[in-house]
Length: 196
Image (tube, rainbow, N blue to C red):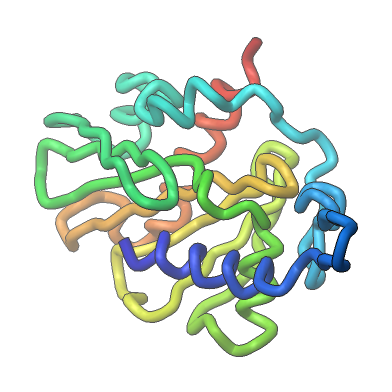
């Protein structure tokens, strides 16, 4: 939940005060996609437009068999309907190990929101990483760092990110490299989201 509140705060900071109004003449600001990327964020050169089905059902982004190949046997999965967008949580057989992922539809500034928050020292971790299947990515946090934890955001459009958050205990095989696991999950999701 903290990760989505973090993005909400960044988005509200960046969009506050946009637009102008002159008496008798209505004006509107440029849509966010027209002014993005900003704050040093990289552009998404191959944006994924058709995301509606995954926005509604984030568990459909990755078949269970692929999640199991990455993280082990899945006991169950559930949909979390969060303020910033729907999220899928896969619970592994060896609980309480989980990985959650979804499109952060409430953040209309994409990776730019994170770059802006980092510029104001609003993040305790901020690390751009190699693109995932050609899409720019950042590992970030605002507290809560620790072994077995990682929060990865991948820009699928200039105005939309896909986040992956493993939360692993020390008996999970990926405990020492949760960000490596997050990268594999994100790569699998992007492959499926891009399919027509």
